[in-house]
Length: 272
Image 1 (cartoon, helix red, strand yellow):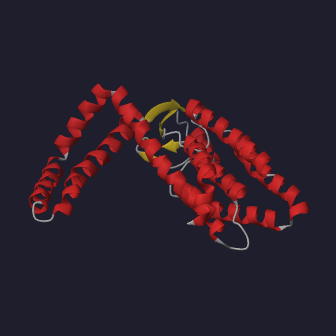
Image 2 (spheres, one colour; image 1 turned 90 degrees about the vertical axis):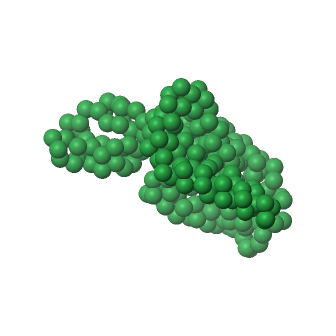
Image 3 (cartoon, helix red, strand yellow; image 1 turned 135 degrees about the horizontal axis):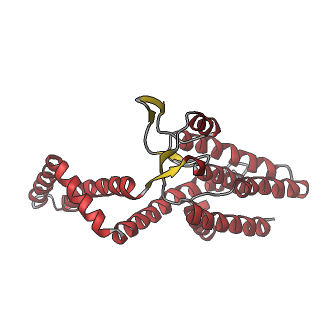
């Protein structure tokens, strides 16, 4: 069972990663296919290995379902990411009876966040380097607009340098304030300059994120949000021709990376 499910999950995440990078979309059949395949395989093997196999899968799904709904409705994740998370919950499950191995779901999610952060940072750094002229110009402008905050942060860093002569352990903190400021400003610049685009309403799909409020003749039609089927119909009915959507970093490859690392280190995780 484990070998079959491992191959299915790996192939599903590989294809999902490819489509997410190429089109910024993951087909529903792939996300739901992963979920129902996990249920199906564990359900079949539960006849020979006991009903516990299937119950474990249900528990994992329910836990990640709640988490996925929270991340989706708080606009942290897109619909494809949320659906894949539910599928991975069914795949990993919650081991019964409860033991250290039952925390596998937690370790996978932790890996997903950690590797996702590293992957996202590398992706955004690549964009900044490829668009260096535009990025550098925008960065200089933003620094000028936030001159007061910039000088305050530099003053704090100078004070930390002076304090570090008396408390050496504080020396590492010298770099935290300016790096934090520059990182936040850089993320904002990249998101606003390179992750937004105007598209015709005919090309807008479910799950797209509106980057700006939609108004017509001074009347608010729709606030920026993740679009559902009713929202799309409302935009059509309002005869909106073009909207600005936000394209996030294709996050699905993080699932593949996290799953690969999880498989290699699942035993050490269970011993923690």
